[in-house]
Length: 499
Image (cartoon, rainbow, N blue to C red; front, side, top):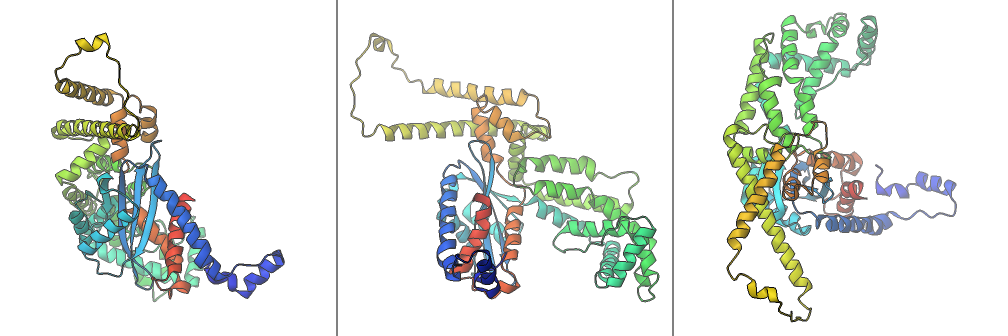
């Protein structure tokens, strides 16, 4: 992405003049003071109009520091519209120079929601990482918070990898990657060795400390290319000591066997174009009973890593409120329903679903009454002629009967849904709810409420990845308070999603 002052470069002007001599290139000030602000206002109005139709929504947020250590806070919103489409929008990435205390973050998030006229009573949940200030902000605002599954899994793996044998083997891998990364001769020799040994012509991968998947990818590539690596390093007296020993290879194989299957789960739960929250409970069940279950041929180190990961995840997801939220989400997914809800909690989850269905029923009735009252407020009253049947109308209250009838209707709708055959795991649950909305009007609204929650905070992470491509070395001296930078940031984050 080129900076705006590109339009003032002599080379760019010469190119445009060659293309069309009649065209006059607008100045940099035209884009910064007129074009981009107008585009931003247009996009903001469109997003605001769409948000008004969101009956319920969830949000993600995160903090980030730019290349010049300028702090920002992001806010993304997720909701399911009336056509059962899952929508995700980045609302803003704001400069936040204040101390990142829980109170300041709580105030900043409230101000951001107020700026977009988002009502807090419609907020279902906020998905964040596990930073203490973010957790405190959610608590101060009284918002339900779901811990990011990706961050939790990363911390579980980091905790399980605290073993001197693993530290030594991973350290050897890093040194091997570094020796090949900074030498074109080593890269050439590695490519020749790969051809001789009929190995895939792959480059070595390096590790990113904040992404456990990059470490696993590095280990997997070292194991794949270990023969070629040993052949190249053995020809260099200074680097022969980097050839992994058989003990290192055993450790790396144990780590790769334990962590390899987990990569796909992280990727699958990080999407924002499909439902992810209902997968958390089934994923935890699968990890406990299959993926991370000890096998007979596992080394002791592999068993230790698996058990530590499971122990950490089970402890962090043992909170009753979190369990209830995940149970409700999986129950509203026609692919799972109550399959992964424990027998002890099934009755409570069904009661909670019935209570939520009645609450939504009452809310819809109140909104209908309010709408009708507004539409007839200015209409002149018309006297209705009394008919013969009015003399036989009962004067007793029917409130109790209506309540009983509502309980029966709600209970019948829930039981019919639960007794239906579960949807295939590869099918789209939102399409299913769209097709069966008329059969389950209350449950379909509940599905829109809870299934919009993202299982991870990857949406905010992606925003900062995009911002890193904007605040590059060539733009690192821009002032965060300058309107140009703010408008450019809003344009870059919002325009690809809504325009």
